[in-house]
Image (cartoon, rainbow, N blue to C red; front, side, top):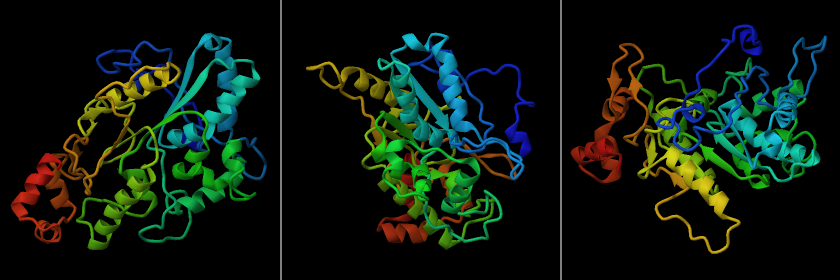
Length: 354
């Protein structure tokens, strides 16, 4: 869409929210950090290096935009920084994974080896799984995730980091756009934030929650998606994965309210940041009660009671977790039988998020 590939409709100023907020009550750990917001208009998952051509009529230069921003920031004080944190949501979250090591190499080539590059990837850990219902690949919405990236990377002339590129033969660089495949190749530390039931992933998989009760096959598919995503995060050292149906969180004003196993996202990020500071200090004991690997174990969308509020698509009224599951066609009697518990006990478990 052309309107997403231009800055002509951007507001002249923006107020930072969530991790970009300058208010300590909303952003307790990084409120006084130097922040730079780079709006997304390259439509290439921050990977493109393609100039506008007569053939396509579009320029895709996301990777080059990041390079140029880093160059400019070096002249504005970045050269004296100790840490550079790249953060992004959705396509920006995937862009963090694709660009962290490249930015580290860029800074090193500029003689700035003392700056540690880190990543914060929100809602960008997508799966190249089989769609619930296969459709013809007409546009980015109808294409399966793998096919969309395969086609896109050719238009964009997409760049992937050297470490991941070496893992795949020529023509298979598309694998590097999927978090669980690129993660083992990364050198820079990264914190992964990912909803177990990500709305963008479900849309790409052709599971459309339009307000009508879901079919049994859809419900099974959604539960399997949560299990599959959970399994891809088991070896990720720093992660926060609530069992919620949502998309993006780090720049939302409610980002402090979400918890996994009693720990909020800002607290987990503080623990991660502290652990990286302490890693080079021999004898420094880990902070008690400061976990950085937090993945929900409950099996249903919104079984975590701290999930963002869901509203009925038609009435606008708020729904609690039981109302939401009923709305989706959740069969309490059948699920209770499968779990070997009484229906009332199951409802109590759902209400408490256990």
